[in-house]
Amino acid sequence: MRISSVLLVGTACAATSVAHADLYVWDWAVGDTGVSNAGGTFDSIHTTYDSGSSILTWEMTFSDQITDGFTIALNGGPNPQGYAGEFALMYFDASDLGDLRLTAFAYNGENTQTSYFDGSETAGVQAPDEIYNNVSILNELLSASVTDSAGSRTFAFSIDTSVMNAHSPLYPTASSWTGMQFDNFLGAWIHPVTGLSTAYDGSGSLIDWTSTGHGFLDTSWRPTTPAPGSLALLALGGAAATRRRR
Image (cartoon, rainbow, N blue to C red; front, side):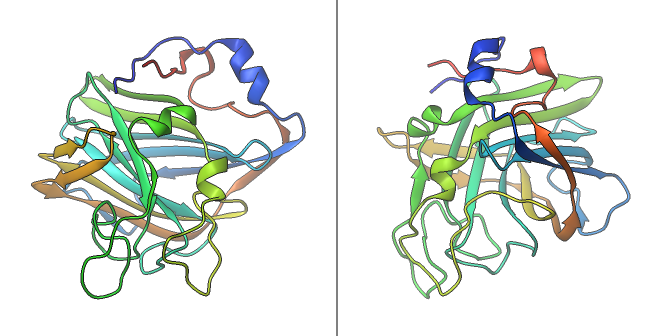
């Protein structure tokens, strides 16, 4: 399913905005710890989450152009690694820059990118707990893009996480499911890759994610900046935002 960069229509923004939601903002810059640049050299991250509309925006820039995709899990505090059945893990596949693909699964808590074929941390291989395949995610995905400029590469997406956050995990744990959201604090488990090779079945489900290089940015309990009364979809450059197209 191809996702193209086009102008986001203003009325669509208005339809999904919430006049009195709380917008939480987090920025990362070079110099922070917990980073491996083996999958691309991290340069900056800007993300927002609107608690009223459940819209998450993400913009991440690398100072080189070797990254072919990444997986990401977010929450409101601890490093998501090791927490099974609580968070969503999104796969952003840019192995073909002309055909961006995003999918999401319940994160199995392992220090791997295996949730797409193994849904649980229990020994052995269990069926994956798919939240979105490459087709169904288009009902919630507002934009996705990869932009190369002056030797750098920027990944960006905006998504309504309502369905993701309301997901009932196939392998529930004692802790509650939260999906992909944050508020006053943020925890993140981000793994960019190089040499990415992927495959999908006829329904758009991810069935292979193989890479030759693998980096990470792991962080926890990072304070965010709240902006009460904000409208949704403020980030990602306004008119420069993108919209999905089948």
